[in-house]
Length: 140
Image 1 (tube, rainbow, N blue to C red):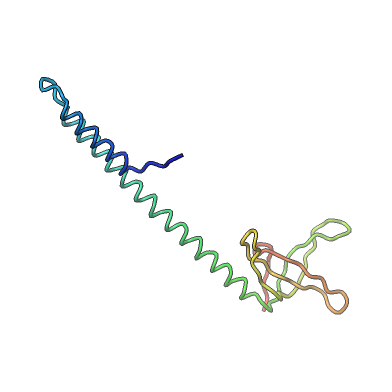
Image 2 (tube, rainbow, N blue to C red; image 1 turned 180 degrees about the horizontal axis):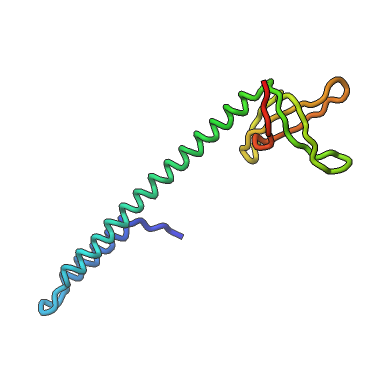
């Protein structure tokens, strides 16, 4: 499906208007108020397209800035002690866990920033992969 801009529509309208003016009945001329009203509507449509285009640009810039801020925040958590909740394997119930962030990476499929967190000590070390939203407390 081809997208038609307000400029394209306005150009088509102008061609049609010129054809109408050339072939109009001199006893029943085209109403000037109707022409002015239609031209004003095309102008408004062009302005709306421009505003929409500008908003799309701002939206994508904001999304990029937010992604960068999330990445910086995730990186700032390296070496920090964090609290999160995880499902216990046996019962399936949520259990509060405390661990240390030892890696940060971006999931190539989703683009989401993820944290690698280790809990426990010695032979009882477990590793978890968490999103930033899973962290409920950060300690130094």
